[in-house]
Structures are given as C-alpha cells and as structure tokens.
Length: 86
Image: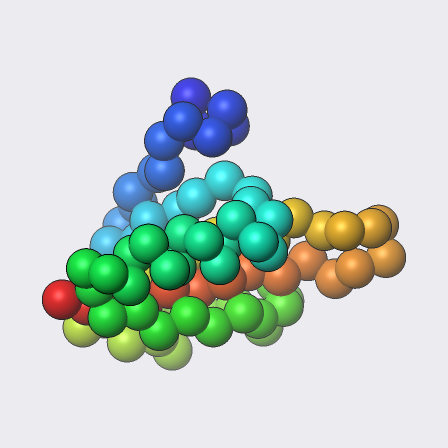
C-alpha cells in the first residue's frame, strides 16, 4: 500500500519519529505543503539525496521525508524535508 501511494510510513531513527512518503512531483509537494500549512507550521527544505543527514536535523518537531520525482534521468535525486510543528 505504501508503494501504491495509499499510505505514508512512520519509522523511528535515532529516537526521531520520521514520516516517509512515496515519490511525489514538485507540484504535488507544493499542494501538499499548502494544505498542511493551514494547520501546522511547516519548514520545507529540498536537498540532494547524498546530503541528507538525519542526525543534524532538529528533533523538536515531526519530520517528513518526501522523495522528489525526477523529470528526466539526468536530474539528481532530491528529497523535500518537512519539519512540522503545531
């Protein structure tokens, strides 16, 4: 169901709760952030896959990781990180 984009997955890494989503297009990520922003304070960051360091991120809020769909095979893999707080 996760791979079919029905559910997000919640995991715990180094005492941090992390929500892992399936790949989304940039436009879908923007719509998602907009809808979440009505209820939560959202801090989005987009980084390249090889620069992701979960240990350096704050553990004061929920973290969601959304892999970005690549537009072509030459694009670098990127993640959008959402730090979500009430």
